[in-house]
Image 1 (cartoon, rainbow, N blue to C red):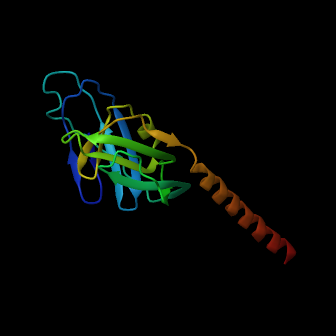
Image 2 (image 1 turned 45 degrees about the vertical axis):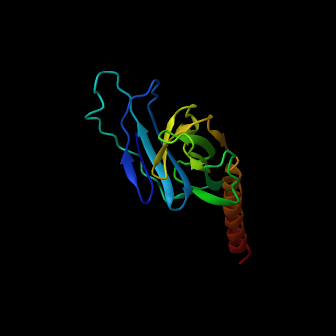
Image 3 (image 1 turned 90 degrees about the horizontal axis):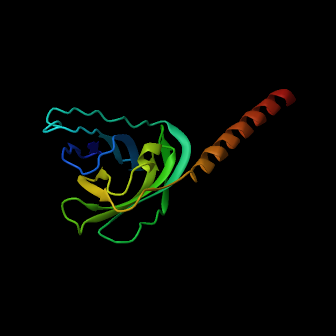
Length: 171
């Protein structure tokens, strides 16, 4: 599993009782995103020479807007007071909760934009975030609610085109 943000990049290699290959990205601010690739192998020391590549994060806004927040060492879900414009294939609004694999009392709650594959994570899946590895304590909560932003931006775009066409016809 590989993951990172603006200030840290790292690789975690270890043994899991259950492993599910997955590649996903998620973003909680313009300066914090995670690109993760999980691969599984099933023989002794098979991950020693394992090389993973992570997906890149696009800067192209896709019209979806999601609430964002980060909350650490608080058992409650964070509340997104602000929205972020999602980019690339991150077209889902996601909410995650988990505990640190090192210090069980360290927990996190985040909201932001994500790929569908991040929404497919299971309880106990590992997620790198802010320099730590967290184990999810519940399945991700994902919605398409941000798509309303895409629909309204497309409607605004179409209205603008119709307005321009009408100006050209009336001129």
